[in-house]
Image: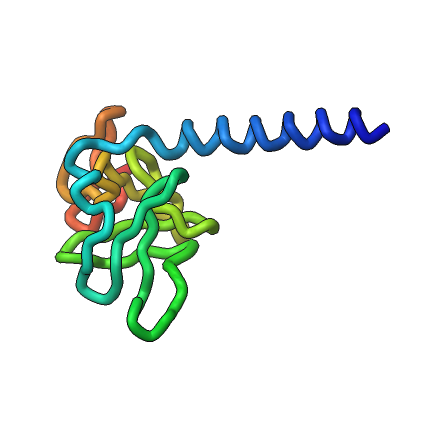
Length: 125
């Protein structure tokens, strides 16, 4: 029975890490420069799972989760674990937005899959 539970747990972990690699592609050389860099309101950090954004580091605050954060004039989206999305569509409050390899939201552009986003970053239907 214990062996069966161990195998089940290993399978669940493997599946979870497999999904993470699909959602968060390998880092670009440009993003690696940000390994630990102070920003407007907090600090960018990276671990083995990806990039995350610590708020008000000096005050010991937490990190951004399930929301957007603006840094240096660019918008970034973070999942429920606090990791930045990259090369992905974000469905947020009834609209869809695209973020590129550096995690920044695209504006007035055609996405790699052929769709357009407007000046606010929203998908043009």
